[in-house]
Image (cartoon, rainbow, N blue to C red; front, side, top):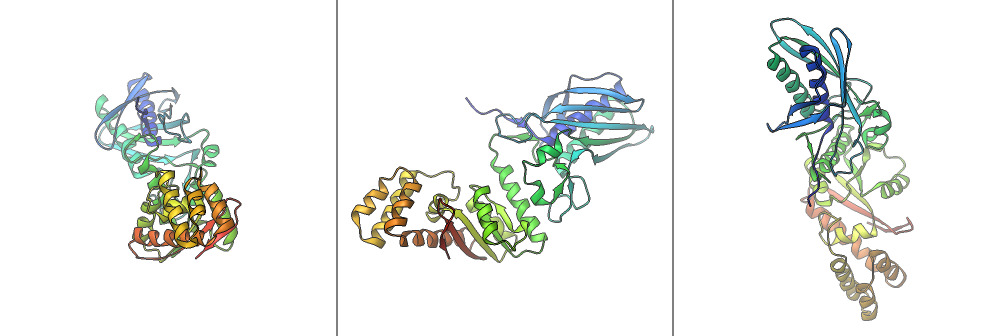
Length: 357
């Protein structure tokens, strides 16, 4: 059975806007509204709540459904407060961010500093929702919509918004309007945004880590670097190197744990993938090549995990770790098309540096 798709915060904001405006121009609340996605397809969204606040002001909200994706905003209430100004001759839309929607404070993102963190895709969907509603009911006027997220400030603490310079709440996002479980594109877009912010901050070098723990160790190792210099690439090794090269960085530092380094050293571009048997087999080959110890090589090949193999070679042939580091750097250079310098640090499972080169 396949994983269930969901919809983005941008789709939710468009649906909430449509529901609030429909109440104002049609005089009745809708249970569901139709939103046109950027690709032209439509989706029906259930309305969570809808009420009139004044003669020409209403608000509505939608519960964000991320499907089977582990999205921090899954289940969040996304709302729109719409002020309606009929004029009889033009159809106009104004969009702003309210409580719980972040404000952009750093350059390098799709939205310029000083504006609400509502990306172009969601703005287009909100605009289409408003214009479509006006056309459906044959009315003209200005619809001012303020997007709000009641728990946006709290939710933002669990995102990378602070690192990207988005303060005061979450971002309203969505290129396609649909959330696909474990979205590859969404994660890569986050990496690209972080790299763009780093370049806009004037940085020519960036430190790439695979998660929060390796990032904390890297930040402790290089305490003088700004927060923008540290970018979590997750498992997206190859794509991050290509993105960094494309954005004009002159140097990349990889700061990772041994298990990830071992996969990177073997040219695995997405490090969540890859057979443990395969990676340990290659490690065993390097161990035999460097140590000449067939028994040690066989023990490494038979290890249950990369951690067990690491402990074996750390104790008996640490030069193998050096080999892993060198191969990791070589592969990174290849993925970056040799357009920038690359150095690497490998942390042992105790957090100590075991390779630096």
